Image (cartoon, rainbow, N blue to C red; front, side):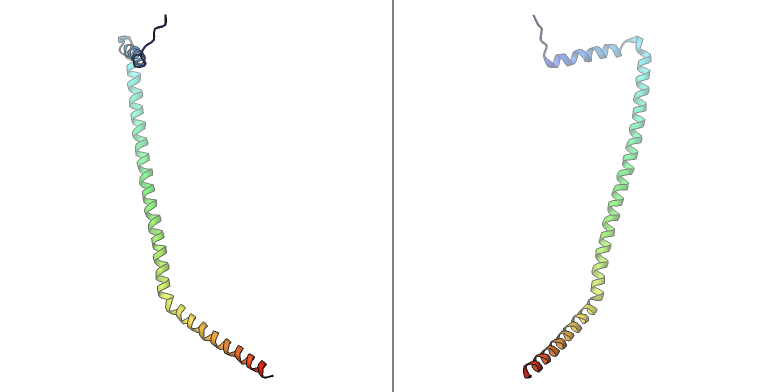
Length: 116
């Protein structure tokens, strides 16, 4: 006959064993060792937390500087376009005048060609 235990009851058996093992009066040295290990773990955990906080703070600063940099690049580009826009308009007008002169020369060439 096989005795089957409820799955929850199987969990409590190892926990009960661990409790009895840890609470044994002969295991005082083990308690001190565990306490030292827990304190060391807590110290290392606090050091890791401090390092992670510094890393996150550095990441946030770098993101802010990156956004500031690209905002400055875009602002300077738009400002430069605003400042040189009159010169670009003058170049466009000069190109338009040059284009009409070239068309006039071309039309003179056509009229000479048609007359002969």
